[in-house]
Image (cartoon, rainbow, N blue to C red; front, side, top):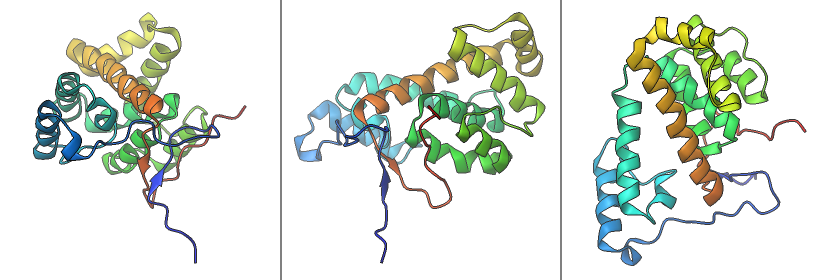
Length: 203
């Protein structure tokens, strides 16, 4: 009988054990417990992903969480674009948690499974919508070159306006930030039956 996998380790090295686990509630200080309760009672409904290591700095956690709440739940960007961009960042940083969480959300928002399979393999995704293509070019240029060319900027501007461009840029930065935190902490992802874990980029 095969063993049920409950979590997906972060990273591809020999040791993928979690470095900064969730401290037991009895060992949390007052500020940590307050930050934990805010997460449990908020839209996230629990202490998950990047907020496990971020609990070491409760005030930082609260500020990062607020930024993330706005970008995820209140941004002017369409949900399909928001989820797709998150997965492009997750693939770029090889972060298992954000990939596992946002893959089904992207499918639900309308992104094709074949498009995401191409993205998972590290190649240019086929069959992207116009919005996904505009977002993909913006994300990959920004991640690889630390800015975007005029053509890519104007394309995004026409689709989502000035506010959308600012929120798109910030969304990318936010998810790079939390993916890095989890990569350093080696925070595992929950096993998702319909989502294959990311593999290392072909060497």
